[in-house]
Length: 312
Image (tube, rainbow, N blue to C red; front, side, top):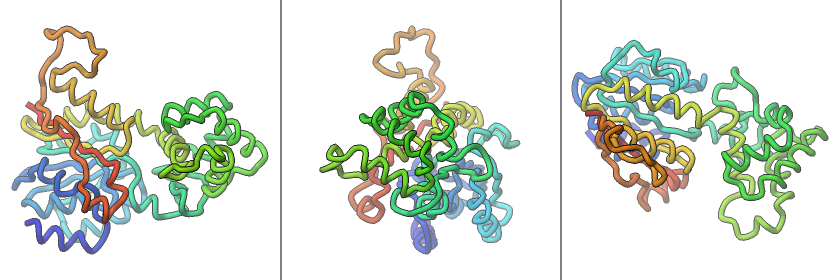
């Protein structure tokens, strides 16, 4: 199984923690699995080639829908695609999935395409929408917010220590008509933080890009809505696996998994033991992370964390 999957995936994009994810899901013949973030189809392909099973896949990105059409030709009735956000997974008519997967964050395709506005390294419009036909762009968001609201986004979603200084600079650039592209955003932040950015291992605008992207797509809100829906859709014994890429996502996943397992969600949880209900078994007491070989091949995997639970 592994070799046939590997040969096929080597032709294109390989998602992070692929083999670890498939191992936790443990695909079985005759079962149905839900890939909540289809992207390039790497996880869906691995699941389908691991067993004679079915996969339903979701994605709100129109480009993913185009890739899914070719995917459908290859796998036929074993694969179905639905162009919707994963927080809408409760609209799926299927119940009793053997496994549900969420690969959070931005896909490599989105980062590599400058026109989508996600990347610091590639020039493009200041957009950042997962679905370019819905919602407001990052440029429109910055224009619509006052300085204090923008500062809170940088602080809360980007965990940026210089949030006030950067927010002030972004608003000034926006009001002056000088904030229209990813290049503009990166340049304004770099100029603003000045000497404070020296010695950083990441681009000084990385946290700002992250914060605006999360706000534009309501990423944390979508995760909070999707997790209980995904758990409800699982069959008994089914596995929910989630790959996150930064601490804000991972914290939400970790707390939800602990709650489902009947554990205190954090050190501040003062709920009574008798009020907790054990509905799941945690399969990853510590998150699964990429090894040195994978990180060397794909630096984006460095921050990935995989957690999984099994529904009782």
